[in-house]
Image 1: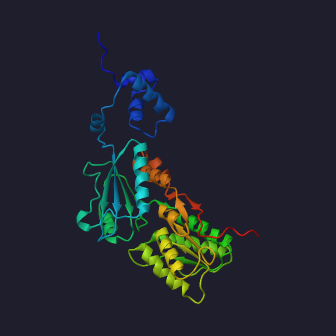
Image 2 (image 1 turned 120 degrees about the vertical axis):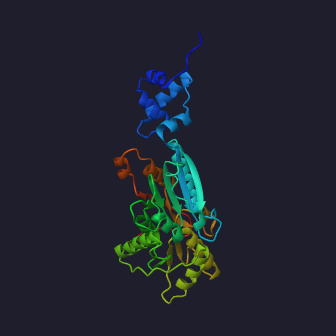
Image 3 (image 1 turned 180 degrees about the vertical axis):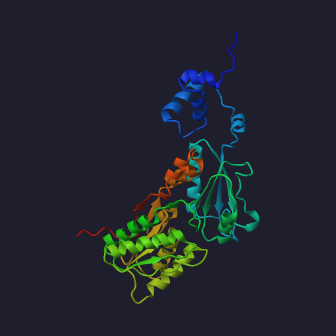
Length: 343
């Protein structure tokens, strides 16, 4: 006589766990330990048990999907976003997959295409929004929307408790301390510091703290205006290098600005790092191919994805409260700063 249909009860008995544990383990719940999940998965494979994902979603009222919206610049192709945000998108999709979720990705830049309530429409269980802070209309529209379900943002210009950011102050201190260790004393900050660039404001604060702790004088931020960050870096480099008290190093608020700075310094006849040191922030792969390769501060992209997903997939209020808001960073040594000077 043929064997009957294998059920979750059979898997639970084989694995020595409860039926609810089987359901949660096979659904990828982070509440289940890796050891228990492996035992359940092995039992399910041995018995030939397959989860009916569609039926499970219908029973639970969940979609098994996370919506990820990438905000681009108004007036541009919505998919024309920075390499930083593509890296962050990739790590977030990977982190969602680790928890058993699919990703629904939407690129948005214009008002007629804004769409945020993927949870209310039954398309997703949570919302992650990331992108440029300069699209003020998009972020304002998002803020005015009565979102349903969990949501978290990277790049928004608001401090409303739903943000996740890199350790901007700590990273800036790493950058400036590296320049100081190379013997630089007149270090300029290049980047626009205002209400729509909170990450730049935090990096300027870290820059200021590092210089003051070293007994050095911080300068006022040199604005890098315009949608084209590289062009803005070129223009800002002209401004700072034509000052009477010309700096001997530049900390740029992000890598795109720093790449423009490097280009302009070369055009003006300055040699990096011999004449002037340069450090950026973001860890863009393009920095490896600059001339010289750009020393930078890089956020832990994999951890950033995990943190963003943790906020929207938290199964308890305590887990949601304990999820980090700051992502660690590290100094990536290339060749745009002189070696450390030994005392």
